[in-house]
Image 1: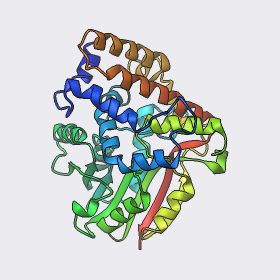
Image 2: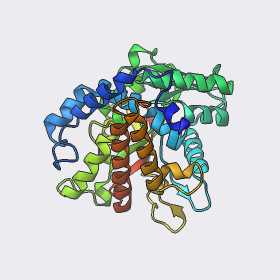
Image 3: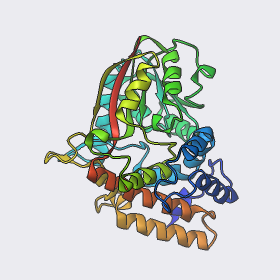
Image 4: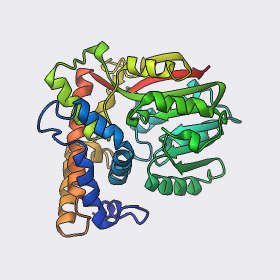
Length: 355
């Protein structure tokens, strides 16, 4: 119980105890009608409203969920293709190392990490390559926590995070200042990927590579925007992850090409998700009955949710904490359903070169 209580009362949080309730209320207004009426958050007006308020939406989202993510997931907030016989942790690190290889990150590279979170992948990639890595995240709380972790590992001379908006990188960094860039399930938060990719391109040296994993729906695998069930799942993923709207593979390719990049490669890293040789990426949300893995199971999430509710009732946890927990639990079910149907992937891998 003390661990759950501490994750809801982190002294580095930018939210006051009273601020949690206000923040989740404000966040929910951006997805008005979600989970009540299919299609309500897919209207042009709803999407444009979230795009306009994306800074508040994304920062508020991570103010609310960062501690929950660390509790259940660790310091790397992403999914990964997983081979039979591979642990969850091994699959995560392998995905990060593979991205570093595809971005051609070398020991003397100066690298930009877009949407770095608390810096788990940054530290792993630095340890793997020796590169100097600068992370940017819109969320101030993640900056505070991430830089503390870098210092604890003795990596703060080579890894650091800054608060900033990857839609406005030119306000933060000089042109042509990085040898490579990567993003892991981050640019899905962008309200306009063309602007985002243009800003990334401006920071990279000519010929530099940008490699990323991104969240997309998959019309090529059966996603149908006219199917209410598919739309319901898509909207559930969006509301539970602070997304303006999910894109398609072609949307990503077109945005890259329109932003000064040559697309070198693009494919779904989970294309063999139901192979006999792989453990589906979404199976992590079932978890395993180990001390840590239990937190990720549906039963584990229910137990955590019950405990959070109890702590909130006794005013140990801030008001609003239960609503955050409920949102994340509902979205976990949407992700599992999307993965089973193969209409969505969190791991569209693309590599692009600045022209």
